Amino acid sequence: MPVATPVDGTVQDFTKRTHRLLIDGAWVEPAEGGTFVTRNPATEEELSSVALAGSGDVDRAVAAARRAFDDDHGWRTISGAERSKIVWRIGELIEQHADELALLESLDNGKPVDLARTIDMVFAGDLFRYMAGWSTKLEGDTIALSSFPRPGQAHAYTVREPVGVVAQIIPWNFPLLMASWKVAPALACGCTVILKPAEQTPLTALRMAELIQEAGVPDGVFNILTGEGETGAALVAHPLVDKVAFTGSTEVGKSIVRAAAGNLKRVTLELGGKSASVVYDDADLETAIPNAANAVFANIGECCTAASRLYIQRSIYDEVVAGVSEVARTIKIGVGTDPESEMGPLISSEQLERVSGFIEAGRSDGAELVTGGSRIGDTGYFIEPTVFTKTSPEMSIEREEIFGPVVSAIPFDSFEEVVERANDTHYGLAAGVFTHDLKRAHQTASLLRAGTVWINTYNHNDPALPFGGYKQSGWGREMGHEVLDAYLQTKAVCAVL
Ligand code: NAI
Ligand code: MG
Image (cartoon, rainbow, N blue to C red; front, side):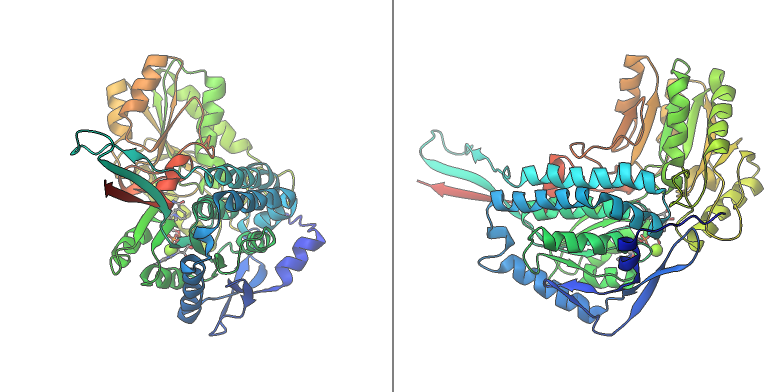
């Protein structure tokens, strides 16, 4: 794989720095002095040395966030208008620094710089601004009490208050975007935050932390602890943390639920998926084929929504398989910093092994490989987009989350059959439906047990649209006004007059 990395000086300086922890408004060394390295997944070269937060640092950060929340003049007591301005400013700063952030993201995560710029960074900026608007609209209700015959005998109302100190643990597939999905609503609601980025991709979150300081967020309101799973686990177990918001694997999600029991902290989870796209025989294949391909290949399949099961009505099966395979064969794969690249490498050697393991299992289970299936080169974690046919529901490629560019193309005959098969999974994150029949589209959407159903599109996310999982894909919703429920709690005030 060619290495084209003409890296801008500002970004180079940033990667060369020794990265510390942001605790209580100051960049500090980790108490135990540990560090870890983050690598460029395209070259396997070391990019940066980053502080490894230990349990002492977790204690310090939680104490700072606690103080910044509990204090009489704390973040929760600042007017909504003031919080709104600050959160908006973070969005503006992300927009102003989007080129730099996109390049940093491309180096750390591997994704094409152009996609990081036009998707991740734009969405992150928009999300902060959308959430800024909510700071001034956190309203309760007045309640007519059912036990009093007339108004004037009692006065009852609800107030929406921030939940408190929030630990936010995020993955590596959309590093800055996932940080934004978490941080923006929490700050808008008046919570204080300790963010734990993924160990594979801490750099854009560290740069964002500087921008958050520049936007005027008071000391201790936003803290960043870089580290591995253990740092995350220490935050989840901490008795002074009120809430954990997590995005990552279902397995770790379940361990968080268990660990949160100590002080019964609130938990929201965005976990894995095994999403389905369904192409009916009346669909416009000119849009359905590229969309169905993108539904699984976008971000090299490292998407919790990746539609790795593609159900195609039998009469158009061969045509759609051929079309999706053609897309797979023609995607330009390369180093993310090369502007020509449309797909970068997987995030890590572990992920390469994992995805290759699924492909191997598919082959030995008897599925037919139409295209792809191999690693590309021997430096960097590049892999070919892969299409399988002749899979069956018992095979791991059709059942398990792969988190790579691998799709099972499955024929179906009837509406009833496809709904049943699409729902035959313990996940329920997202689904796509491609048809021109309005009734069929909405009937299918209504029967699919998934938190998001896209019709004639896929992965169309929006700050105003709630996102989250049914079944084992998670608890709670991010974005839209529904995310406010994750960071607010309701106080009922009842006065008998
Ligand atoms: P992971 O769930 O282990 O890591 C996600 C985040 O959780 C990271 O910040 C990590 O440091 C932290 N973490 C790990 N163990 C923890 C613990 N015990 N307590 C608290 N925090 C902890 O995911 P990993 O290992 O990077 O990827 C494994 C698989 O998980 C992937 O192949 C993919 O299938 C799935 N995954 C799903 C994601 C999604 O968006 N739903 C994102 C990332 C991974
Ligand atoms: Mg893990």
